[in-house]
Length: 179
Image (tube, rainbow, N blue to C red; front, top):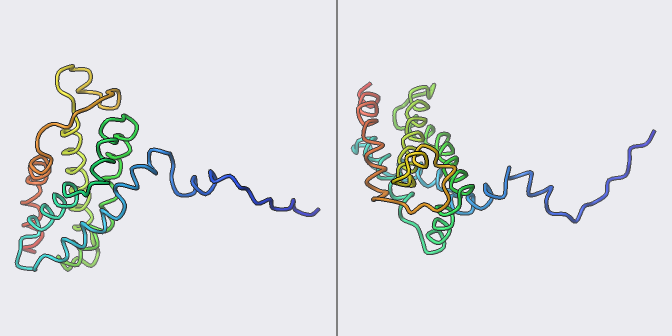
C-alpha cells in the first residue's frame, strides 16, 4: 500500500499553529519578542560589583517600561483586551531560562539550582506586579477575576510596582552572592 501523496496547502494556518497556540499569543509575541533575552543581556552587562538584586531589578524595569511607539500602541491594545491581557501575563514565565543562565554564571552555580529558583521567583514577582498594575479598582468581583474584566486602565507606576514586587527577593539574591 502506497502512502497518500502530500498535498501542499496554501492555508497559512498550519504553519501559524506550529509556532503559536492562539491568535492572542501571536499578537503578544510581537510585543514581547526577545524581551527575555534583553533582560538577561542587561543583567550580564552590569559590573560584578553591583548587587545582583539591583542588576536584575533595573534590567526588568527597563525592559518592561521603556517601550517604543509601536510597542506602546500594542501594549494599549493588550491592556484593553481580556484575552490579550491574559496572554501577556502568561509571557512572564519566559524570563526563566535566559535569566537562569545569566544568574548561574554570575553566581558560579554549575548545577543552576539556586539560579533556577531565583529566576522563577523573578518571573512570579513580575507577573504579580503586572497583575496589580492591570487590576481594576471598585467592583470586588472584578478585582478577584481579572480575566472577566473588559476594559482596564492601568493604574499607578509600572516601574514602582515592579520594584516593589522584586524587592522581597533582594535578601535571597544577597545570600546567594555571599555563598
